Amino acid sequence: MLTIALLALLCASASASAIQARSSSYNGEYGGGGGQRFSHSGYQLEGPITAIRIRVNRYYIVGLQVRYGKVWSDYVGGTQGDLEEIVLHPGESVIQVSGKYKYYVRQLVFVTDKGRYLPFGKNKGTSFNAVPLYPHTVLRFISGRAGSLINAIGLHWDVYPSDCGSC
Image 1 (cartoon, rainbow, N blue to C red):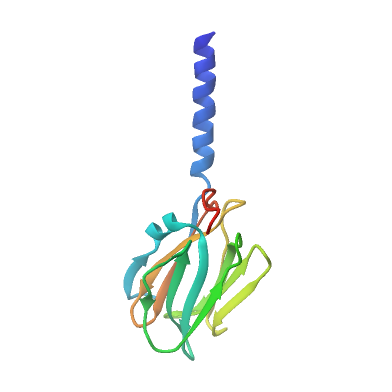
Image 2 (image 1 turned 90 degrees about the vertical axis):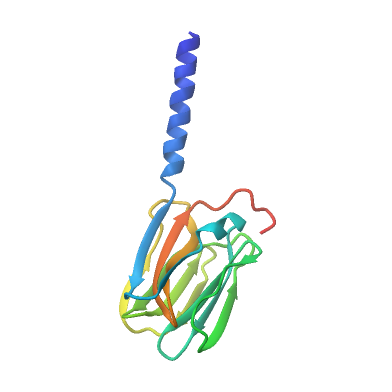
């Protein structure tokens, strides 16, 4: 009887692990070649995405920086253009990112679970639309390649961190 109970507990634990492993997904890279690789993967440990800064010029997304919890990531990209910033409301998350690219990223549009539509850049180029593969997951971090502009972007999705009541 004890063996059956232990076996049932082991199976339940393995099933929970399998479900957890299936919560993350990735879209990208969208853009052209070149630039230095970057990843904000370590910043997701600071909490959910709470703000985004995007630098744009007349044609391209020049640079970006993301706040995870209360900590800003390193800025990636160039310095020419106008810096714009959006702050997410407490508990608000990005659930879709679309945009345009050619040789570089030209436009990024963030859509939140509160119905906000947050566009940056120019509506010209090849379109992409990125959404998480699994339900109830949100944008957790960004990666890509950058030099004097954002060459390419990748989007990483997972569950909203449950231990972030103060973010």
